[in-house]
Length: 251
Image (cartoon, rainbow, N blue to C red; front, side, top):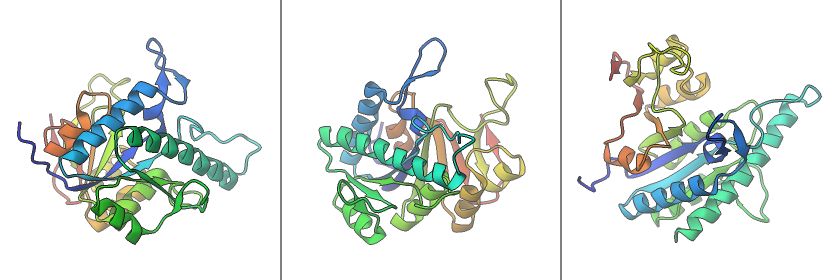
């Protein structure tokens, strides 16, 4: 297998749930962190960085906050709580990357200088150019904006070649494969089709911005062996969501 990477700079989007420890029988969350999964992700990033790819990383907070708002919590306040939760996840990933020998930086959209740097896209690019992964916390720094959308914005700001969206499923399907056994897995599909078919591969605002600005998203399973490396080498069997309006293809 060639070790020539297809993408030189990426925005890796990780859900908070991807970091969580799950019950092997039920699939329910047991703990907010799975140390082995986090170590595996960090090891994969380190290996890919050695091939010449620079990483921006956006992490959600579903493992801590899970997107559920208590009836007594104002939505904007709940989103602020979620931003703090993303920072916890980002600091955990920074520690894991540092243990792999990567001098990772956490940059936050909300100022908290005691343990992270304020986000500045020029400084982020400077870090990436010398091989330092940059982990983006607090999403876009404002309520009502998901980390999917914030990830697209950061990808554009740092000049990423592609958004790598690592999930617990192996691509985008025509329906939920856990419910509908006849669901079709797409090899490629446009953002427009995703929106028209209401597939919710990413949220609508993220898809709209990515489509307008011409950046593709590769959706793949984080749990498959060497999944991040395979995505960079072009061997991953996920779904490429394209900005160009072309007919979809399936497996």
